[in-house]
Length: 340
Image (cartoon, rainbow, N blue to C red; front, side, top):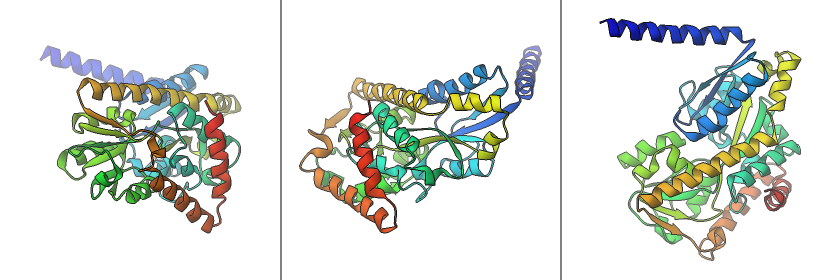
């Protein structure tokens, strides 16, 4: 009984201390994202950003992070920032369909070589003003991509495009879904956190994820077959905040946010994803999984026609809507070569 009372008292003391610290800050930012709290991405990227902002503001900015979709579910996180359910989020633009069509050009085959390079590409596109129209309702802090996305299946081994025929594959966004359709798969839209349970229950046969996602969402526990098609796709992400929250901050605190905005953090995000990609793949190797690496990746003659058709189809679709898709794609491919 005494031990129980001591534990209760200690818990209460921790809560009071945390509350007091939050109250002492001039600004409290609620930061929502969908990665698990145990993920290196949460710890080494988002928590690191929060700690840096707190330190540089002398404790005047406090960032409360809500991982695992606890404050808002993944598909709703961008709107949650607009509506002040959250003050900030790190989310996938493609989870909000048709809102970021130009941004999602970076998801097309052959753009991203690794997360650091891809993050340089997407942040550069934003800083050059090519994506401005898509972010008028929030204030982006930095944009980034994950590394190359691959295919991970529970039972069937994927060696050639026809092996995907009829397989239910989790797709992260509509852009990747079109690519999977071209490969004769049956894409199933769902956020990454739902992948484990859906694969476990047999709702899907496999997932499209980078090695980082395989580790973060425990896919290696179920999927024993992995097919690497280099350059197959990547995903766009953004860390962004509510505009009115930013505008209401004193000038000196805005500067702290400004100092932690842009390319330096985009590349830091990319480096974090590249590191976890290595961990996820090493985990599969250690477990003795079946890893198929397609020679030439997306340029392989058996895979390239589908990749080219998906790219052309997407660009044509955007151009038909009056969007400068080919201009953005041309610059994207230039950056894909120059970014490191």
